Length: 170
Image (tube, rainbow, N blue to C red; front, side, top):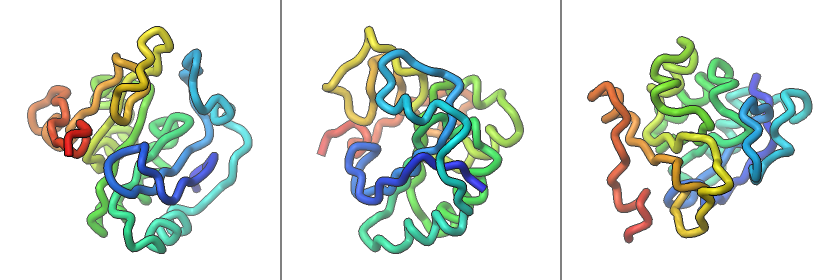
């Protein structure tokens, strides 16, 4: 079961194209200036089965991408893993925001490493209010990186995403 804070079915701000964004409930980071402070508490939210979330996503034939947001998705890595596996089996592009750094997750718990391995893109790093920028695509502050996860796993280090789709160059 995944403790969710909400779902946006037609997001165009959490990655390229029409996406579904799953907001999880619970975050240990508590970044000053966070745009979702209501997701910090690990209590509350709504419990949902991975299959239930997958069916919601599948109902939109225009949606080919899914983004995990929060809260902190990697605080629920084990619970999100079955959903990530379903999405990848059906060729959805999968991205996730995290307040952790890629390096932390690559050396994290088994569940965090497993979830990371299912992602196409990771937007990592805490939101830092003093580095906030409205000019960045799919990021809130300049310290956050857009990472190509498959290439990062192959190289054993964080590799920036270079796709024009993710860089906002169409």
